[in-house]
Amino acid sequence: MAETVTIHHEGYPHLVRNIFDQASRSALIALRGVSRAFQDEADSRLAEHIVVTSHFPAAVTGRLGRIPGLFAPEGTPPSKKRDKYVRTLRGTRIVDVLGHMGDQAMGRSLLDVSLVGIQVVRLRRHPGGRLPGWCPFVAPTLVTFTTFSEVRQQRHDHPAIADVCPAPEGVGRSVLVLRYDPARVWLSQAYVTPFSCPASLREMVIIFTAKTTHREDEVNQVRQATRRAGMLNTVVFSIASSIPRVKYTLVDAHQLRPAWLGVSSDRGSSVEEDILDAVLESLQKWSGRDPASAAAALSSITFMTRAEYREQVGHAQFVLETIE
Image (cartoon, rainbow, N blue to C red):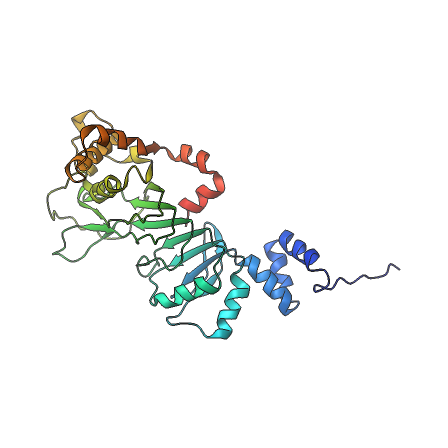
């Protein structure tokens, strides 16, 4: 009978790490029940992509599968819990912030002691609430999922608003997934919250995404005259305020209709040309640039289809930036 050989995890840590690195999710879940040391090793890998939220339940399941969650109550966590965060979150690379976060100190303390290796932060609206009002974690890439939501207050200037959380300093690449419902009659008067472009930002991607269904009752009334560039009024202003320092990529902009930009459909120009015209006008009117430098700055704007963008960034990154 062959002799059984036991490998102690403390004597051969590199072998144990290799085993955990190759283990499937189901194997990791089984291994974490063996010992406290194995639990920490397994948790650090299971927590590569997590959800941080102040709402229950913390974990979410969607088209990306089950994403484990970390419930973040308001206030600074006790030292014992902070130590647990350090052990569990050392392998975290992707963080989804789900819904509004109450206490900024909580997020900062988590970041300082735990989330030191994150590469992507994704801001998502909680199903029963709103988009995060601030970004508690800093990563090279920030992805924001937002949707035009109807405003019920009768005195509000806009029938629908798409909230955008300010990007914190340290973000180099920002992706805004802007969802809209083509069936809405108020799109030309919809409003996107102006987004910030910190000094660290070098690239901004805006992915226009049509919603296939909606449940809300439509607010069908005229609030005000359509502004220049319609639903992209503030987007155009933000672009004009930051190019050529920030490079912009607009994905599937050709799917927008001229009327949503306040342009007559018989004008004969493409939506891409209408957007460039609006940016050029904003550069000259508000930024005070001469015609030559304003026209040159437009080279910082690139238009792509969804397929072209997927090919550029790769399938895995594309899924991360387009699917919640």
